[in-house]
Length: 141
Image (cartoon, rainbow, N blue to C red; front, side, top):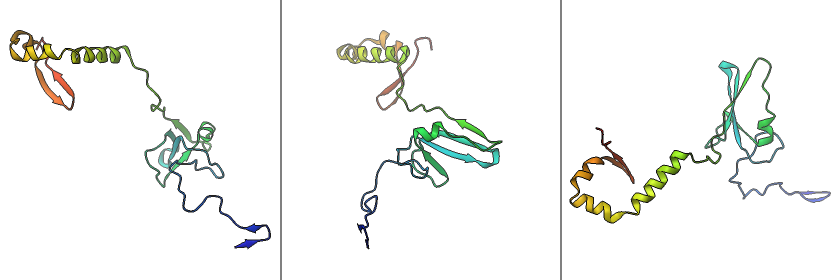
């Protein structure tokens, strides 16, 4: 199709689909970071982390629009915290990791325990296993 200014071109090529979900607000092309869902029965707007997939009854919003979101009079806005950010390890996490590394560094000691160290074996009897994790019985039980 020709116009007086030249051939008309689409703003977005039709053969290219962006894998990034965009903000649902009109004329906003920023990447979505949050999902808005309305609960009409409770007169509530729920704004939470970006849903795992786009749904027809939900609205994806960019950071700016999610911060400026307001609800109609009489409605409540519930903002769910975004726990997807990098979590800082706690002292317990670091201690468990250090213990796992120490245990992995002593393979010959574990082999000796399995062979003849019956007194030591009874202290940490394996109760269950799931993948690389083991559940050990407490020495008290």
